[in-house]
Image 1 (cartoon, one colour):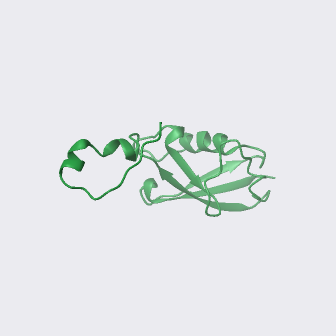
Image 2 (cartoon, helix red, strand yellow):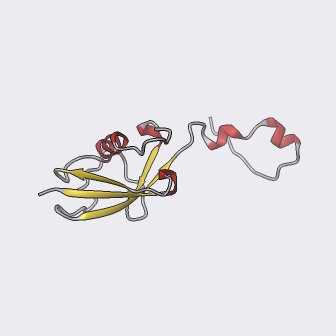
Length: 110
């Protein structure tokens, strides 16, 4: 009996991806790889590390299996997809922002 993961999100260009899986013992990391194989044509394909899959309001780690997330065998389950930019948000702000009188706070722990 198979399971279908229905992936939705603004970064999919208004489309949805249906990813059939044979078993709920696959990990979130494996789901990301399968999702990339079905990435919509004409859209820039991200790398797996850029993908965030949200399930029940949380982003499970890549090592979690679908069964650990209570995905039921034989059902269709909806999850949300967000593609992270390649440049981390903290690196985007520059010294020029600080000179402009930006009121953003930042903290660097080393």
